[in-house]
Length: 292
Image: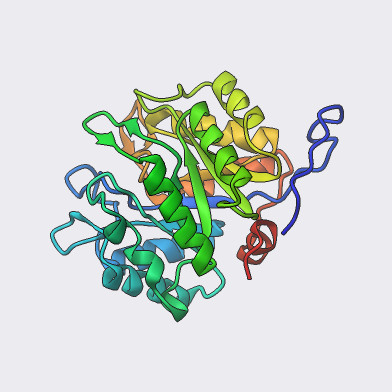
């Protein structure tokens, strides 16, 4: 695992930028074909979109599974088809499986995907660090649930993809680290811009970055029209990026230009190139995060 090093007295780009990890969140739990025809729902669609995002520059693929009717599912057999299908085509891709409890909020269901073996085993598992309100529902993550999922990931050799929607959630990470429940490597998505959590401003992003535990590789995501600002802000200050249709359906919200996951990844790649920041390959990402 590479350590996170940054000298505040010698800011980027005088201090060389680390290679940029692009994390593509391609499906999520909310978007449907009624929202956009570009959202991948079926196993084959998710595998195809994952391949396209990888080829465009994404090294981490954050996947959710859906039932045949398009509704979110926790079932490991569907996740197994997705993960093994991606690995068959892009074997070194870093694959993160969701353990979201927004709909199926029992430990047995949320941890089902963590029990997969061999080529279907995820490299990472999402771990939301607190409860929060989404526009239409609450997402409940009790301290007990967070700890149990973290222990399950630790015991299975799966790296938690920490998710923080506001600064207080980062305190949860610090508590779990102090208790020995979270072990390095540490990777965290900072998600800003949802209406009932941290605003999508560069001030709030900077505050959250400074509130992180030491030695955390972090990526910024913006919800909806905040995605571009949070992505570019993260690229500029040395963080990494989460991008994709899970968080944002539009390439341009004002013109209602519907995005594809590939186009969103390509835009980040172009911007990083314009400021002289190279893109991490999957092999690079594995080395940085501490994955085999």
